[in-house]
Length: 205
Length: 205
Image (cartoon, rainbow over all chains, first blue to last red):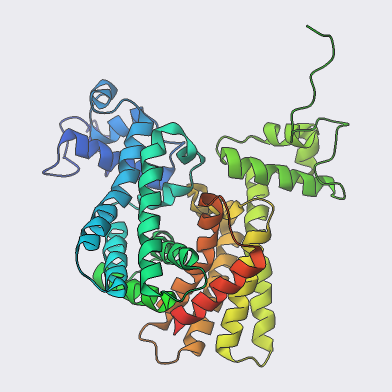
């Protein structure tokens, strides 16, 4: 029965409270808070009001940075594929053996999926992803799929269905999203990335 | 400006209309309609009222068969893992080479995931799955994961981290859920099952 105000809820600092990410911009804080809420409560159950509260800003300030919830999710999703897509383009300009390039792309891509603070890839299956605000994400993810298909075909020229081999490697890479969700302990990210890359090479034959 | 009543909406027959599944029980029709709505509109956006409407029954009749929406989803999810779990137990009683048993389980499991009328596996990532009504589903899926770990370890006794190899095979199998969602055309189910099974064996080394 004390008159002390309640302590701030862990992870949900209010205005003037602790910053979530010490060196982040407001925009980055919004993305981070939204990612946590989307991944833990679900996308449908998370409102922009709740995101603003978690950051400790007014909802109006959130709308200064993002037009709506879709735009926040789109940016988070694009961040799960764009670095790997850029890296695939870089690899294609180098004079690498296709198997080595495939192994390197898998290693990098798994690192991106494991390295994000929140496991946003679990939202790939949302029905909303089929709608317009997510067109760019869908296109970039398809481009990444095609990079895998291209490398898998080059790495095993005799394969009966090289596109399918690329799709299976792509699926193997994204399976770390489910592992991160389901397993209580995972190997360190660099070890797991290397293991998946070696497994992808064996898979591609 | 005709007085003819509107034609029933395709796929949503009302009471007295066409049955969705000619030889199905009411319970099976409810499961089928719910699976379609969950997979296409999303779980949060689907109410028991909407499911009852799609079947062409009263909501009260739906509650005669299922206590709530969670129970319907739990039953649908369990149907994606239980047949493969039963099959894994059958395989373990046979005197099979571990690699042959692994290949056979992958082939069967991929067939189950591709053979279901609706791609219910895309709901594995729902945050709700962590709650109580889905305990049995989570347990059965973990048992299936352990069957893969066990077979992968037996198939490649020299592997550095056999549990991880089993997890990657499990992830590869479930990646057909994403392929079914993302690709407009897939090879026939028996061909794709055999391809994934062969890829899993290469992956396991």
